[in-house]
Length: 521
Image (tube, rainbow, N blue to C red):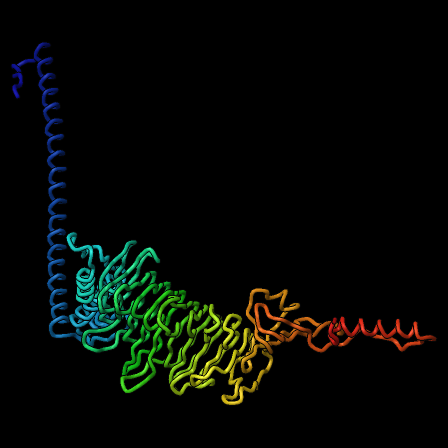
């Protein structure tokens, strides 16, 4: 800064220069003051930053100390255990399991549980399609593809194998428990033409196959074996159709641990040949097969097949609902002293006069059959419904309605006992048949063969109507005359002469003829 100098005496011009000097000094001082303020502010900011830096350093140091301390605690918990309250709390699982202060033990256990749960959840949603294992060059035989699917399912814990629409030829063997086979209804057809069954539930080691579910399939066999073979227990079958199998429809084998409690629902066993549609041998030294159950199932067999029953039952079986038809032989053959067949709401009928609806052989008796609310209809089985010990003993009922069948025939005398509240219809005693009719059998059954001695009983007779009819000459429909009935009332004669008496007498004769008590000529 340059200031003006003054002389010994001040002139006007010198005074002016002096004032300018003071102005310059003031300006410079102001600048110095502003700079000092800025410097002070900078110092304060620096001091504040230093304080914050010191605090941050202290906080970081504290955090490091805490981390190191936590690591020490975790090491203590995991490696050597700890008995502090925090350690005890951390070592108790969510399910209440106490791992005694060892957090590692808890973590390991819960890890294993999580892996197991994931595996279980994964298995529940997995299934295989047989198509995934098909060899494009071998689609005429699906045996290998199914075996590969079964092996893969066993190795990977998969429980379900599905079949799409189509015809699959081969021998399909379910060899492990808890497997589900599922088709797409009767558009999925399993068939085979060899000497092994189409579908087998049978292990390779001789152990029982159980808890399997087979559904929505049609099963056929064009060879010498059967359609379905079951060597196991407690399996379930729903909506299957066993149809046109040459050897047999289905067979359940005896097992030492029981081939029992297999359940069949909503299924058909139709048009099978060989040994019939259903075969369950009697219990023997090889084992037993008790308590198998059919619900809403129906059974028949191929018309021209050999003389075998539709169902050949040697153990205890329950049949609820559904229908059985005898075709040119017997409907149900009850075989052996240990057999017991319980029918609930089931119908058995026939198509031929030589049919037997229920037959008892090899020690089975009439007590081996129980029927509740079932319909045993012998309308077409003119030679009888019940056959015992290879001797035809007559038709039982067309309706059992609400009561049970418990030995209505004495084996030798053919007597009827214990009728209870059942309606008796279609009973054959000896060579003749007794049945219900609504009117003259010539009108009611014009195309049916009848035999001399057959009796038709009116369903709703009145006091003066014909109570029934008896066949006096065999034929189609045969010659029938009314049974004894009351004639119309005839008052005592008050005739005063012979002519009036003749009139009254002729009126009496007319009433006797109308009541069937006198021939018309």
